[in-house]
Length: 67
Image (cartoon, rainbow, N blue to C red; front, side):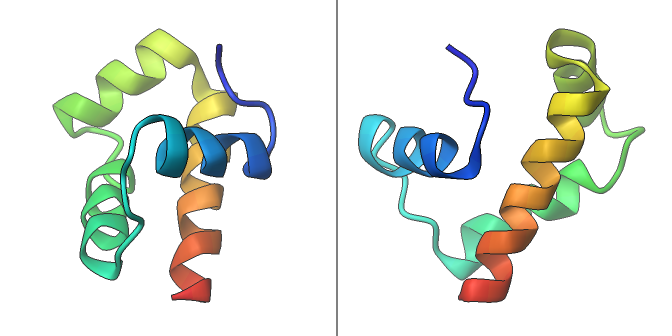
């Protein structure tokens, strides 16, 4: 299941995956996702599409602002 809203994504990341959204983790994900040419980012876009990629970046940015 691909989360369609922030709350579902946040729950998936923090509870189902057990990932703590610490500053260092969020910044490292954004550093990669902000580089569209990065192999990991390119693969993410290929697998999930540009719309979902943009949504994920905005959700990580939202968390970053809250930290």
